[in-house]
Length: 112
Image 1 (tube, rainbow, N blue to C red):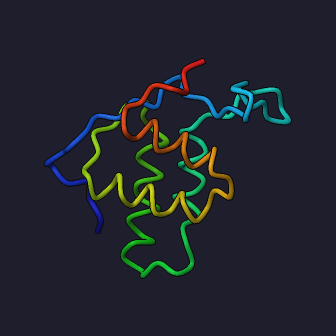
Image 2 (image 1 turned 180 degrees about the vertical axis):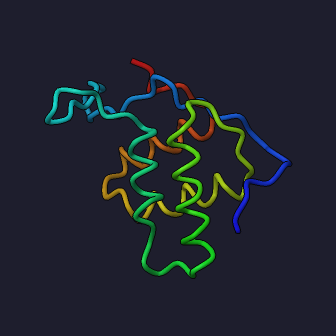
Image 3 (image 1 turned 30 degrees about the vertical axis):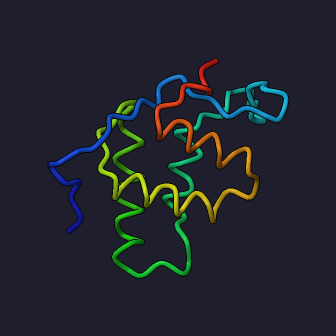
């Protein structure tokens, strides 16, 4: 069974980080809520990438479930790489992927 390792490289805060459009405006969902970066990442991790092997698919799923429960998470460089890899294939636009990278790398461009 996959477990998050004890040695963590970086604390990542997902609280109040929202997806923005090309104008820098927070993206609004059909239900009127704001699109959070955390939700985008969780959706990508949950869906995964069909070309991943079984172990990576399971790690991706488990990481999505852990992230859903927390606004701040200690991540290893391996976990950050997995998130980036999955999101690069899941998110079509450069802007969306760039925002994910900014949050993972601690660049605070996505606060409202």
